[in-house]
Length: 345
Image (cartoon, rainbow, N blue to C red; front, side):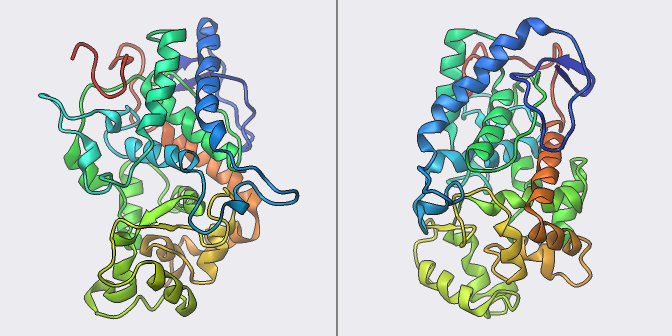
């Protein structure tokens, strides 16, 4: 069992963290079985998207340039985008209503954050098995962990016991979430504002861009008008720029999807950092970690590029830290019956 912000909670299952850390002991053993059901429900939804792997190949490596299994890539982004806005309270899942202006329509989330049907399917299964026990906020944390694991990434133990919020904050979603156009200073400020380390956590969590897709609208400014110069980003490798330009042509479909990691786009591995070293970071915010002169993050990028084990260990630690941002526990908030609406709506 474990704790979130000092509140006693129980784990959904006893998984030894690859970071080598276990949450401190606590009680409430009576909720262990439903927590295990939480993990099982997530796996049932996500496992059909696990790619079949050829012998000797990393998970996801055979998926091709822009194919892949979308459900496995979606939960980590949802969890991240939730936690950076008034804490890990599942506010990102709330739909518009008479009292809610949904965060789903904030600029960083609109048509970008996906995976809501995954959460709906898991929640429906859990409400049938153990109604009112597993929160939507905990589902997001569990789903992020399992999607990384099933894609070849590290395992870690997820402290549980989060409660769901009853409000959303679209203004905070627009202002607090890191932008693909942010420079290093802005990224560090946003990570520091939520209590995360502006170097170690920033570099480790950015490594989630080792799998997934991004819309061309977030890439094209680097290709054609970097910082208003009407020139490409000089930090971008020329060959990779040519590849991105073919996939995201000037005046093309801004919603078209492109791989974040051009090497192994569906595997959770350390190639993201090697790509940065080759000046093949897809987003400006990615390349800023290494290419900003005097960046305190550059040494960490180099360490992770040379050691996937070091990246996995740090990523696991940082995911636990992020999952503890502003959580509601005890009698705070509620356990929503439907993740899209507050109870009683």
